[in-house]
Length: 169
Image (tube, one colour):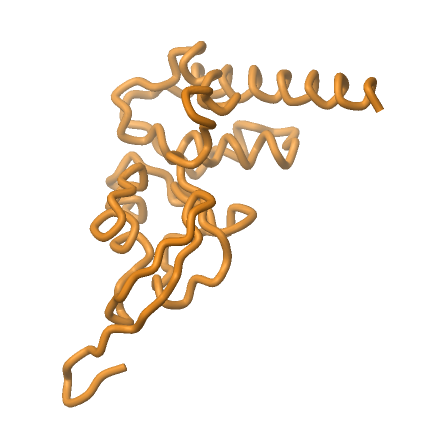
Protein backbone atom coordinates (compact mmCIF):
# COMPACT_ATOMS: atom_id res chain seq x y z
CA UNK A 1 0.00 0.00 0.00
CA UNK A 2 1.30 3.49 -0.79
CA UNK A 3 0.36 6.84 0.65
CA UNK A 4 1.71 9.83 -1.30
CA UNK A 5 4.44 7.70 -2.88
CA UNK A 6 5.60 6.13 0.38
CA UNK A 7 5.28 2.38 0.80
CA UNK A 8 3.59 1.23 3.99
CA UNK A 9 4.97 -2.10 5.26
CA UNK A 10 2.65 -5.07 5.51
CA UNK A 11 2.93 -7.79 8.13
CA UNK A 12 3.26 -11.26 6.63
CA UNK A 13 4.24 -14.73 7.71
CA UNK A 14 6.24 -16.96 5.38
CA UNK A 15 6.54 -20.72 5.84
CA UNK A 16 10.23 -21.20 4.98
CA UNK A 17 11.75 -24.66 5.25
CA UNK A 18 9.12 -25.75 7.74
CA UNK A 19 9.39 -22.68 9.98
CA UNK A 20 6.97 -19.80 10.21
CA UNK A 21 8.82 -16.53 9.70
CA UNK A 22 6.92 -13.33 10.58
CA UNK A 23 8.09 -10.25 8.65
CA UNK A 24 7.10 -6.68 8.01
CA UNK A 25 7.90 -5.86 4.37
CA UNK A 26 7.14 -3.25 1.77
CA UNK A 27 4.55 -4.64 -0.68
CA UNK A 28 7.09 -4.55 -3.53
CA UNK A 29 9.70 -6.73 -1.79
CA UNK A 30 10.35 -9.91 -3.74
CA UNK A 31 10.51 -13.34 -2.19
CA UNK A 32 14.19 -13.44 -3.17
CA UNK A 33 14.94 -10.23 -1.26
CA UNK A 34 12.94 -11.38 1.76
CA UNK A 35 14.79 -14.68 1.80
CA UNK A 36 18.30 -13.30 1.29
CA UNK A 37 18.21 -9.92 3.00
CA UNK A 38 15.68 -10.35 5.78
CA UNK A 39 15.93 -14.04 6.69
CA UNK A 40 19.54 -14.82 5.77
CA UNK A 41 18.52 -17.72 3.51
CA UNK A 42 21.15 -17.24 0.83
CA UNK A 43 21.12 -20.47 -1.17
CA UNK A 44 18.96 -18.77 -3.75
CA UNK A 45 21.00 -16.64 -6.16
CA UNK A 46 20.21 -13.07 -7.09
CA UNK A 47 20.95 -13.43 -10.81
CA UNK A 48 18.80 -16.51 -11.28
CA UNK A 49 16.67 -14.88 -13.99
CA UNK A 50 19.41 -13.63 -16.27
CA UNK A 51 20.79 -15.57 -19.19
CA UNK A 52 24.32 -14.53 -18.23
CA UNK A 53 24.05 -16.15 -14.86
CA UNK A 54 24.84 -19.73 -14.07
CA UNK A 55 21.86 -20.15 -11.76
CA UNK A 56 18.81 -21.86 -13.22
CA UNK A 57 15.58 -20.16 -14.03
CA UNK A 58 13.55 -23.18 -12.92
CA UNK A 59 13.72 -22.94 -9.15
CA UNK A 60 16.41 -22.19 -6.66
CA UNK A 61 13.68 -22.18 -4.11
CA UNK A 62 10.30 -23.75 -4.43
CA UNK A 63 6.84 -22.65 -3.50
CA UNK A 64 5.12 -25.89 -2.64
CA UNK A 65 5.56 -28.35 -5.53
CA UNK A 66 8.39 -26.55 -7.38
CA UNK A 67 6.30 -23.76 -8.80
CA UNK A 68 8.75 -21.12 -9.99
CA UNK A 69 9.18 -18.75 -7.06
CA UNK A 70 11.39 -16.30 -8.90
CA UNK A 71 8.97 -13.45 -9.69
CA UNK A 72 6.91 -13.74 -6.51
CA UNK A 73 6.38 -10.80 -4.23
CA UNK A 74 6.89 -11.88 -0.63
CA UNK A 75 3.52 -10.47 0.43
CA UNK A 76 1.68 -12.68 -2.09
CA UNK A 77 3.26 -16.02 -1.11
CA UNK A 78 0.75 -18.15 0.76
CA UNK A 79 2.23 -21.65 0.33
CA UNK A 80 5.26 -23.27 1.97
CA UNK A 81 8.66 -22.39 0.48
CA UNK A 82 11.53 -24.86 0.42
CA UNK A 83 15.07 -23.77 -0.32
CA UNK A 84 18.24 -25.84 -0.63
CA UNK A 85 18.89 -25.08 3.04
CA UNK A 86 15.66 -26.88 3.95
CA UNK A 87 16.42 -30.17 2.21
CA UNK A 88 18.77 -31.75 4.74
CA UNK A 89 17.74 -33.11 8.12
CA UNK A 90 20.28 -32.01 10.68
CA UNK A 91 23.64 -33.32 9.50
CA UNK A 92 22.02 -35.82 7.12
CA UNK A 93 22.02 -34.63 3.53
CA UNK A 94 19.00 -35.06 1.27
CA UNK A 95 19.66 -37.96 -1.17
CA UNK A 96 20.09 -35.50 -4.05
CA UNK A 97 22.60 -33.45 -2.06
CA UNK A 98 24.47 -36.66 -1.16
CA UNK A 99 24.49 -37.73 -4.83
CA UNK A 100 25.91 -34.34 -5.89
CA UNK A 101 28.75 -34.82 -3.40
CA UNK A 102 29.31 -38.43 -4.47
CA UNK A 103 29.37 -37.54 -8.18
CA UNK A 104 31.47 -34.36 -7.78
CA UNK A 105 28.65 -32.36 -9.36
CA UNK A 106 29.31 -29.23 -7.30
CA UNK A 107 32.08 -27.57 -9.34
CA UNK A 108 32.31 -23.82 -8.52
CA UNK A 109 29.06 -23.94 -6.58
CA UNK A 110 27.35 -20.92 -8.14
CA UNK A 111 24.62 -22.95 -9.83
CA UNK A 112 24.60 -25.80 -7.32
CA UNK A 113 21.60 -24.74 -5.24
CA UNK A 114 19.42 -24.35 -8.32
CA UNK A 115 20.71 -27.54 -9.88
CA UNK A 116 19.91 -29.43 -6.67
CA UNK A 117 16.41 -27.97 -6.35
CA UNK A 118 15.65 -28.84 -9.97
CA UNK A 119 17.13 -32.30 -9.46
CA UNK A 120 14.88 -32.85 -6.43
CA UNK A 121 11.90 -32.06 -8.65
CA UNK A 122 13.23 -34.39 -11.40
CA UNK A 123 13.57 -37.26 -8.91
CA UNK A 124 10.18 -36.56 -7.30
CA UNK A 125 8.47 -36.42 -10.70
CA UNK A 126 10.39 -39.50 -11.91
CA UNK A 127 11.20 -37.82 -15.22
CA UNK A 128 12.32 -40.05 -18.06
CA UNK A 129 14.47 -37.48 -19.89
CA UNK A 130 16.69 -35.92 -17.23
CA UNK A 131 18.74 -33.95 -19.76
CA UNK A 132 15.62 -32.31 -21.19
CA UNK A 133 14.21 -31.60 -17.73
CA UNK A 134 17.44 -29.92 -16.64
CA UNK A 135 17.97 -28.03 -19.91
CA UNK A 136 17.02 -24.67 -18.38
CA UNK A 137 19.83 -24.93 -15.83
CA UNK A 138 23.05 -23.27 -16.93
CA UNK A 139 26.41 -24.21 -15.44
CA UNK A 140 29.53 -22.12 -16.06
CA UNK A 141 31.80 -25.03 -15.17
CA UNK A 142 30.10 -27.50 -17.52
CA UNK A 143 29.54 -30.06 -14.79
CA UNK A 144 26.62 -31.50 -16.76
CA UNK A 145 27.86 -35.13 -16.92
CA UNK A 146 28.40 -35.16 -13.15
CA UNK A 147 25.04 -33.49 -12.52
CA UNK A 148 23.23 -36.05 -14.69
CA UNK A 149 25.11 -38.87 -12.89
CA UNK A 150 24.05 -37.39 -9.54
CA UNK A 151 20.39 -37.25 -10.58
CA UNK A 152 20.53 -40.84 -11.82
CA UNK A 153 22.10 -41.91 -8.50
CA UNK A 154 19.41 -40.12 -6.50
CA UNK A 155 16.66 -41.57 -8.72
CA UNK A 156 18.00 -45.08 -8.23
CA UNK A 157 18.13 -44.48 -4.46
CA UNK A 158 14.55 -43.17 -4.46
CA UNK A 159 13.38 -46.23 -6.41
CA UNK A 160 15.20 -48.55 -3.99
CA UNK A 161 13.66 -46.73 -1.01
CA UNK A 162 10.20 -47.10 -2.57
CA UNK A 163 10.74 -50.83 -3.16
CA UNK A 164 11.87 -51.27 0.46
CA UNK A 165 8.86 -49.36 1.76
CA UNK A 166 6.48 -51.40 -0.42
CA UNK A 167 8.05 -54.64 0.82
CA UNK A 168 7.39 -53.73 4.47
CA UNK A 169 3.71 -52.96 3.92
